[in-house]
Length: 280
Length: 188
Image (cartoon, rainbow over the protein chains, first blue to last red):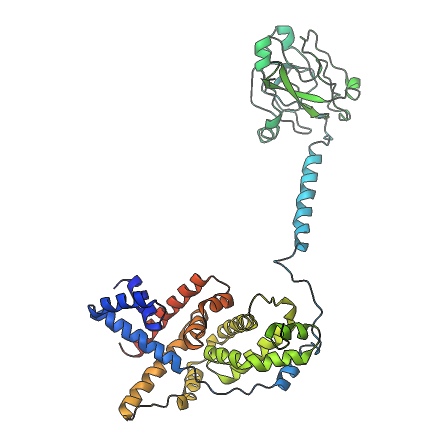
């Protein structure tokens, strides 16, 4: 006998069924001896439970209750109306929120801080620069892995070269902190696409070609580089430590997308920052 | 609002009229005691539960919302207390339970003249009582509410904090569980 039918038998025995359905089930039971046995058991159970309603009298008294209430420290006056707490209340929320806000603040300021070991100039793009050994770097225009800066470290940067000209390829930027694989993901959002470079034949820079930075051993950069200007080929690499601190202005990332209305290349300003990865 | 309705008495009790709360106690203690007794099978435990339930009700009068019946709200408190008590008394020895059941023999007065049939009826009633006491608290409570106290499903749903359909399903499952427990006791 399936469970559903047994449930029907229990409902029939306990009177939880309409009269029409009860008649239908009764008809089925008459043809099924096992169902009839189950129904009889359920009916006996119902009778027995009803008989259990008779219980011995209690000895509860008002005095006993009053003593119990007073023993709890409750006087006969009701407790002052307190606002019903709904759920856990909002008071507990502030702690995790404050912790998250503090963590976010620390993370955001951490990347703006200048490392003690030397300036980190980062310029999100896909172009890497090759160290020329004398503090100068050659840039290329081939899209490469996004790289990010890391404070104080100086490792090899994957070289790519601008396609415009050899002179352009020798565009010098500040000594760039090399990127470690773990840092590359961080700078993914700062990529500068080089489709424009390839289209125009000129290297694209997100800042002026005379991007400079102080020596790594000197005080770190505290001001960002100059704001971007129209792209132009770089003929002579140069860097000036003293100009770094003075070069300030917003840095923009040139996007691969163009303006829908004008067709002009678009760029995204990332604000001023002392840490810029130079690309070409 | 009539002055002697449960809601009115609650409002008066909130404002400091302890006599109003005593009226509520006198009006509903038997109902609460019956339920607690069916759940615990012991008079002293049931009385303790009733007392504790009313003390908690007094402490939490400000939380009572008059959309629900006062008895429903009270029985919810008692149900929770009985569940807690059942959990704590799981380690009670079988001897104590047998003793409690033995104290109830005066109730199993057979109304059948044949002593043999009386004995059989008593045996079956004892098996039913034993099976009910052995049920988990969440099954026992719905059996008591529906099949002993004969409360309606909406009331049961409100006491248990579930839907009416959920209450019906719980009753159904409890009845099946009770039947499964009775069968071995009766040697079937």
